[in-house]
Amino acid sequence: MSDDVPVKLRAEILAQRPYKQGKPAPADSFKLSSNELPFEPLERVVNAVRESAQFNRYPDAGATSVREALAEHYGLTVDQVIVGAGSVSLLYQAVQAAAGPGDEVLYAWRSFEAYPGMVTVAGAKSVRVPLLADGRHDLDGMLEAITDRTRLVIVCSPNNPTGPAVRQDEFERFLAKVPNDVLVIADEAYIEFVTDQAALNATRLLADHANLVVARTFSKAYGLAGLRVGYMMGDPRVLSAFHTTAIPFLISAQGQAAALAVMQEADAVRRRVNEITVRRDEVRRALLDQGWPVPETQANFVYLPCGELTERVAEMLREGGIIARAYPGDGIRITIGEEASVTPLLAACWRIIERYP
Ligand code: PMP
Image 1 (spheres, rainbow, N blue to C red):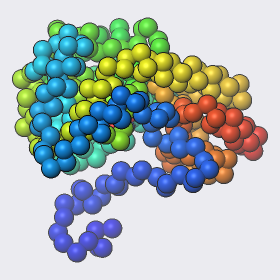
Image 2: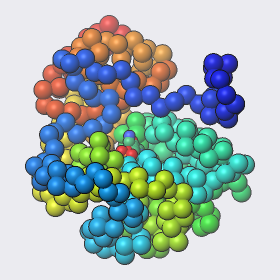
Image 3: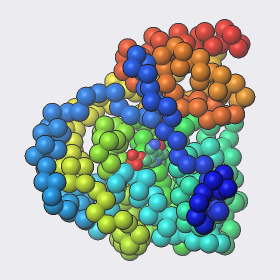
Image 4: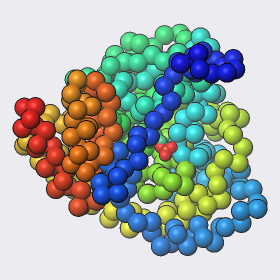
């Protein structure tokens, strides 16, 4: 691969496979590959974006109004909140701030596929602890993998792409055993879809743990994936280092306006999220009935472990009008989308299970 590049670039970057979004979905299929909400944007959000159309001006670099609104919502001070261009940008900033060459970043695998890339960019080393067979985090295994080079531990709950959430009690026990000068990020991108009362809500632990940071986003439950707004909550001294590694002015005025507007639509957001979680549980039950070993899921997607058949299964789903995310050799993640997607999805899955029982 590096043979094709005309200039000297970092070998570890060239060795990293770029983040792939997949082929564009054919017009008559359902795009269930990126965990987006299937609904039209809310009117208040559209209006707010339209009104913020001063394209000749830089946005507020500190996203102050959004931070103030989030601080009020969570009962935090403004300096306990940082906003970024999607939570993925904040995760990059956090990794840059915490880990450099020789340092280790620890996370479960398989998990969010952007983690390896951001660790490589920082020049640090990924330490991946395999998930348990049921798609859950192996928190004991993660504790054992901590070394004196560990600078950051990322816990993704609910886990993308497998679906289960970490339990609050197991996370509390875990956090108590992590050295308290090691940064822990709870990546809760999908927390709004959680219906299990025992699942982790790491914001409850912020007051007592200066090494804990919680990452959340407006991309999933709030339906603003295209506007790129995410946030982190934690100790101001830690977050201020993430400001240092930010690309200036990255959060657009439109994104900030949309985030503020959608926070005023709590009821509409809750209704939409509820529609998705009810559908999720129905789809999972139907897939279990068909014989698919779908892990428990607290997010807006289901995971089909397919092993070596993954790419073949993804192709059959595609032929059935379903565009899903394939992890070759491992499995397929399917977002819970619009109601009309359910029948073709279940029909395609049934054809696959008949063909490859
Ligand atoms: N964390 C997880 C676990 C995700 O799945 C995603 C999106 N796929 C993100 C963070 C980043 O989302 P965004 O940058 O849109 O906030």
